[in-house]
Picture 1 (cartoon, one colour):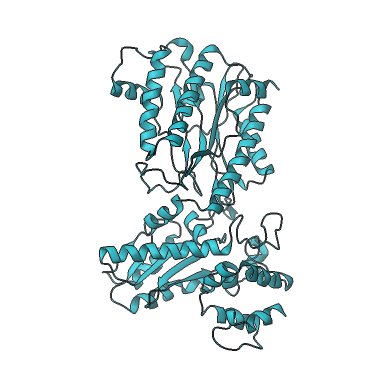
Picture 2 (cartoon, rainbow, N blue to C red; picture 1 turned 180 degrees about the vertical axis):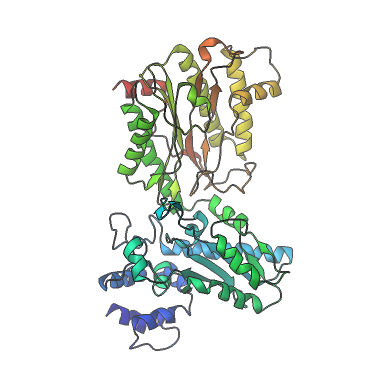
Length: 518
């Protein structure tokens, strides 16, 4: 009854009366109109229709609010995100491209092609865990592999969207689980059209052939779907060049919406709790692998999908290998453990580093170096909150300078280095990585955005000063050798300054001692 009611309504009638329509006719009809606009007006209608399909036994290629109510809330297409959010992202992307073309005198006809990730295999038919292409997920909310999103401009300037999906296949679904297929993709994902995956080249060719001047926006250097480029290239004239849409996408992804900010808060909350529990349960004699397993366990038990990246769990001198991920050594009594770990929740990632004494007690040298790093981080966070027009590159320069000055004070380096540049160079020698990177759907998010960009409300980034003094550093006093320390927090920049999303992850010396001794 609900399907017939929807079909009779003006909202879904496509300008004609539909009193006795079959479900497939209904889906074909709504392809003809801008379904995404209706989603922004009424998430409720979207939910009612999904409920009807669920009752009819329709299964989709990813969780829904009815199949997985413990994961998705009412009206959500993806965790924490409504269908209208994805429609708005698509519209803003096309608006950015349109403005770019007007500014630079490019053709007004534009078509954008964004592929989903492919399944990858360890060996034979044994797959790696699937993770969706972030740009594709950002624009669709779709978690299915091999799909393709196409966006284009109509002659009157209106933007449209289509998903090209794997067709339903009983045999394949027996082994790999349900697919959404073509027929229900319009309703489920809120796009204007849906077509079989095999038709994408024909669709693009038809659009491009209508005009001699078309901008084709496709990142052909990316190997997400290698066959896609080889299928598209022959249908385009030799004068039609692919142009990458990634710069526009990264501009959009850089500034988090309120819903995205809440997802960032949640993923950071999960990781903070997991890191605290992992530090508390660690002890001398644990292997780095065991500590790795604990942080993974605690993240998943608090609803993270998985770890956001292979964690660094580095005991003793291993901490001086900045991207150490072997995690095979034993943490000995008296050593520090540096752990860099984060989780992914709803497609958004956290990134935390904490360093602690595995036995619960710092040596004097360990504690003084730890306090240097902690003090520098506090100064940097204060700058973010109090100084206008600051950039991540400026934070890096400040970190290098302050580390150099503090290392002079504790006699790790020569006190005669009085010049600003000399102190900076000394700081950089002992912390050879940047102090910050953008954070979001990816750990090193939006890499096309320069770190010389002035911080703007909605940006999320890390603040992660460190000190690394390898065991063979003969120019450093003996007691400081073999110590590596990093403290990393995730920050949401707001109109009021810095909101530290990982503030509940313990890092004060007194609190660390208390946590681990308990």
